[in-house]
Image (cartoon, rainbow, N blue to C red; front, side, top):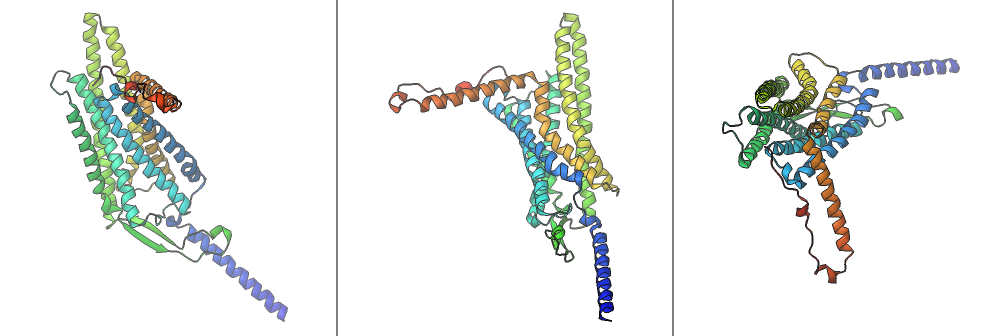
Length: 380
C-alpha cells in the first residue's frame, strides 16, 4: 500500500512539474518577455560593435584631418566637421546602449538598467545627434546649391555666418529632441514570477522596466514628430540635387561655346557623383527606419528583428559618411596623406629632441607642429 501511495505521489509531482513548465513556457512567449534570437545576438554582439569601431575610426580621422590641414577648413567642411561629431555621439550612445542592455538583461524590451534618468538622457542625446545631422546634411546641400546655382547673387557665406548656421542646427536638433521627452520619461516596472532554481533561469531578473510615455498617445505623436522632419529634409535635398545637376548641365552646354566643354564635364561628373553618393547613402540608410516609424504611427506592427535591421542601417550611415566623402573628393584623400605625413614628422621630431642633451637643445631651433599645416587656396 505504501508503495502505491509513493507511486501516486511521484506521478502527482511529475504532473505538477510538467504543468508548471508548460505555464512557464507560455509566460515566456509574452511579447514583453521576448528574448534575443540568433540573428539578434549576431547583430548586437558582432555587427554593431564593428560599425561602432568603423564609425569612430572614420569620423575621428576626418576630424583630425580638418584640424591638421588648414586648407581643409572650408565652409562645407565646417558643416561636415560637426556632422562627424554628431555621428560619433549617435554611434556611442546608440550602440553603447544596445550593448549595455544585452549584457544586463536577456529580454529585448527590458530597460530597467537605464533608470528614469537614463531613459531621458540616452534618447535625448541620440535624438539630438540624429536631428542635428539631418539639418547639417541639408545645410551642405543648400551651400552647394548657392555655390553652383547662385554664384553671383551675394549668397557667399562668411565664417561667422557658417558658425551661426551650425549653432542653429545644434540648437534646433536639441529643441526638437527635447519635445520627445514626454514620450519616454517614465520608468514603468513590472514584477515577474519566481524563476526555477536551474542554471537556465538563474540570471533572469525578477523585475523588468520600460521607458513609457506620460500618456499613450504621446508615442504616436513622437513617431510623427520624428518622421516629418526627415521627409521634409529628404524632399528638400532631392529638389536641391535636381537643381544643381540641371545647372551643371547648363554650364557644360555654355562651356562648349568657349571650348571648355571637357573641363566642365569633368567638374559636372565629379560633383554629380558626390551628390548622388552622399544623398543616396544618407537617405537610403535612414528611410527604412523612418518609414517604420510612420507605419507605427498608423497602428501597424513591425517585427522587432526588422527594427534591429533598420537601426543597424542608421548606425551604418553614421559610420560611412566620411568614407563616401573620401571616395568622391580627391582633395580629402590628399589631405589625409598630408595629415599622416605631419603626424609622422611630429612623432620623429619628438624622438629627435628627446635624444639631444639639454645643453644642446637650447642651441637648436625647434620645428613646431604648425609648420606641418599646409596652406593653400580655400574652396568654398
